[in-house]
Image 1 (tube, rainbow, N blue to C red):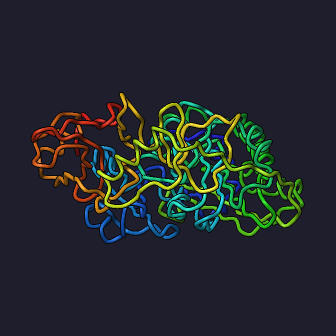
Image 2 (image 1 turned 30 degrees about the vertical axis):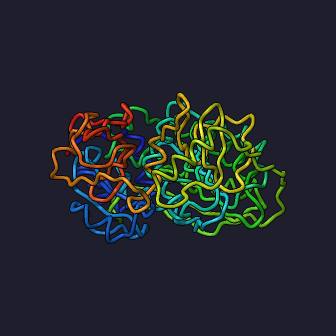
Length: 435
């Protein structure tokens, strides 16, 4: 049992009725809850559940969420395949409040590492545009990797400060999520050393001021009639109910639809706060031109030649080439000039020595049944571990590019030459141990 800050204890006693004190503080003697969220972009729920025996009870507020007691989920080959995302159960409560739909324009303003942002994208089925932003570049790169692993086709991953984005996207988005940086009181059980080490009353005050700034900038980017969800993983009133009160006073164009607070002694989770607003007043709007797609090029022609040999039918629709790299862009995606962008749509691959070489992103957005040449490995097949370690494996597939799957779910690419599959799994994704 770790020691909670005395001031935190005092604050929580002011916040909760005395009858709940014992139950609240008792939770810190127990293990934290763990959860996973299934990825419907990878297949139907029956197929996803069939390969994940470690799923427990469903999470009440997220239709694809489940509790689990499994340790080291990152070592599962189905994690590498993007079949699920590890996410703390109560953190799943905010995204559903936005009721995101296909074809909408959606922004997750503070997105890394990507739990809530990929949760939103899973509701869109690849249709529309979801911008996932993280100002800290190192964290934005991790976010981009998770977008790739989950097979999200319609994402734009950016790394900018909120004020830089609001200057460009005034009145642009239908839905915005602000999962704001906070004092992290809800993480005292899950990340005790880090969360407790950083907590202080001064940090609570600093977080509240930063959240206010982020919310102000986010509001500028919301269209009239659009929804904005605000969430934290803290219990501090200044960052939760107090933030909502001040926000409504400063933004008469917004109305509160709902707010909820999940306490760890009342729900099976670590604790979370979420509120959702609607913009009812007029919104400033700026016209964003769609990106002008590159004209048909040698690289695009090389991709189409590859596409005919690799896929059974046409896979990509809106080809765009930059410096020999070919992308499939989301429909009507904006011109991202002057914005730091890490990922737009699907990076299909690049032309090397006159030949098209497909990327890992392409195969993670595809499905087994779409491809002609597939090596589908069972978890009991020793070749699966060899492949995930980056080694070559024996196979009887036809020569050429080959999709590698684990029990029907794509995990990477290889190139078959005379009975040997040469490994094209990116080095950064190779596993040293397999669960």
